Length: 110
Image (cartoon, rainbow, N blue to C red; front, side):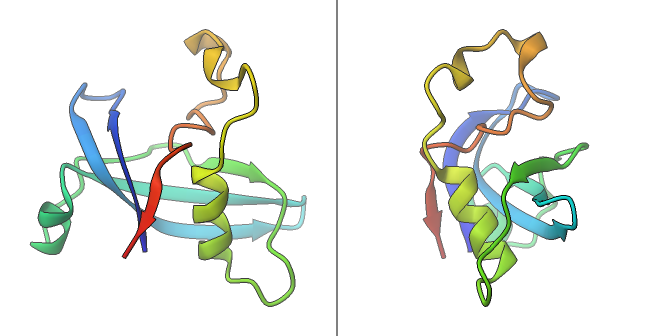
């Protein structure tokens, strides 16, 4: 599974539309830490190309999966969930790094 949403990558300014979760680690502190690899397109991913960017810092999601729920599926659904009011409007220097809501509104795809 992956996330489809066109975003501008902070490191390069390039647009990437296909994002693959590389890991989802459930922490004892009650959150999940995820790493994401971004590709220009699904075709680039399918062709085995390297990601345009692999987020240098993991995204931390508050909350943990329910018993029996797969951490990767939980993380994907949380990443595309609607951002709370005002969260996306914060100045860049006040946003969590990386922006926890970067993938909000994206679609989970095969």
